[in-house]
Length: 211
Image (cartoon, rainbow, N blue to C red; front, side, top):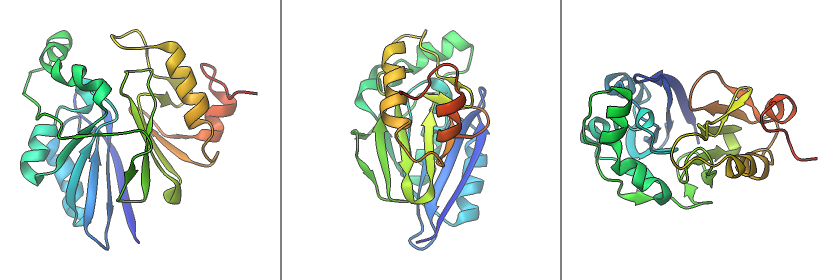
């Protein structure tokens, strides 16, 4: 199995979007299509992939703004944890809050579960609430890769002062679900540069590893 991946910032708030696929089967996923659909589709085409699913770490506007256009181009299913449906449905008000033009997003048609497998890349969904109630991270053990959304950042963590945020949940998600992964795992956060699980366990001043 040959897995290809490219992560790159998109959209008005520079969300890290990831295209991941299997070049042998030609199937792939787009994680967090937050904008610049033409850029996303250029990457998809360069890998020769057919996108099966648009997979979202959570439903803040900067992670979902290009979902409609990418779905129209690919016919892919739209995947989200059900605890973030209220945020998805509030996209118009989110856009007004940030002064960003509103374009309707397609309704999610697949609800993600904790520990649900992802066929492409032998990944697994990890429910990591705290930044939002339905925040998800996606772990690919064979690739040594974690797509952490806005749960864990280089030297920082996701904010919890927005509606639905919970600092205690966020800390528990990071310590019990993410810091138990292999320390060499590359972490692609929702924004900014990558890091590793081990570096965050030792150096993240917001959430340290449990003793």
